[in-house]
Length: 447
Image 1 (cartoon, rainbow, N blue to C red):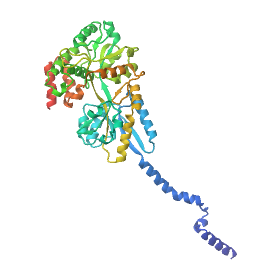
Image 2 (tube, rainbow, N blue to C red):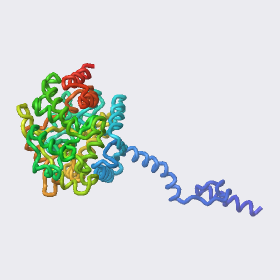
Image 3 (cartoon, rainbow, N blue to C red):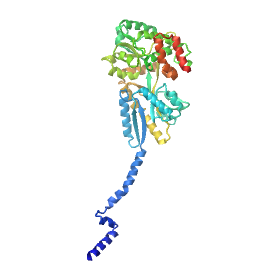
Image 4 (tube, rainbow, N blue to C red):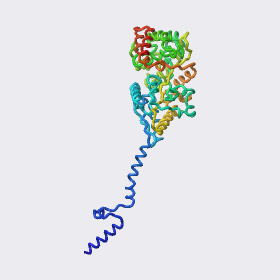
């Protein structure tokens, strides 16, 4: 009986202490004050974590600047640095797409479907106009203050990437396209520099051919890139830098086709139907004396060329056509890459996207990217003592040029660009006359 009273008194004391009777009877120790507070705070901490996660803005960036691309290393470093500097608030997530044509097609499909990537790149040909007309792109106009605009080459942002008064693309990588030649091979046939006119060039080609060398590389497969560049140089030299404004009826296109047909008498036997690897391979292995391409190839001369090739490579403006409307020293080029962004409903995400694009266009970062890759950019970086020599020559020659005109692929409608390789094959094989070659292009344009 005394035990019952004692237990009853104990239970009363415990109840008064605010501890559950059932807990005591169940054999569990009572929770301390700190444990109770911690347990109560746990849901709040979890909510805080969720809120923090919500604050981090994710930016999707599918890019071709990966893998073996000359810009891959620095671009990767810049993205890593940006993510570290903005940890918890912004994160750029890369989607690697090393196949450029697949990248083009996928981006086009996504934009048309209304699923434009947060940030992507495009060039000055093919899909650019489709993107502009889609209504899915961000307008950078509100962000283009004097400070940002001042980091670009003079006048660039007034004419490039502008559509119906909106700045829908930021011009980034610049392509200037000189003649690249092997000085050692030219010296073997008596030339210390590249000829100034097409007449003089063909005289040199005769000597190179007699020495069992390929005078100049050509191709008609894929997009016929190398040969398209040659045709662009010739058309501009004959018709002047504004030749494309007059359309395919301008006589310069037929006259240029005549010169182009002759060019195929001085190229490799595998040129018709060849893809980009063929002309590149001949030049990299010192089988061909002349090659036409852009600054991104500089790294390949060192990495993929035979021993000593890089030291032998020199550049020059393309020859000028006597009696033509072009000028000596004239260059062709185009925007190799625009930075483009999807239109955002969320203002915070829009600002995050702009912040990353400003990071990519920061002059110090661009200088690092240019030095590593050999590529040229619309952002002002200048020429210094440690600027790579071929790149330096490109900058100096293009700055001194009377004009830098667009190439054929950038200037013509996509239907014409698509028809060009097949029409060129027909011209090279003698199946079409120069007049018929141009008619094939006109027919494609009118479809």
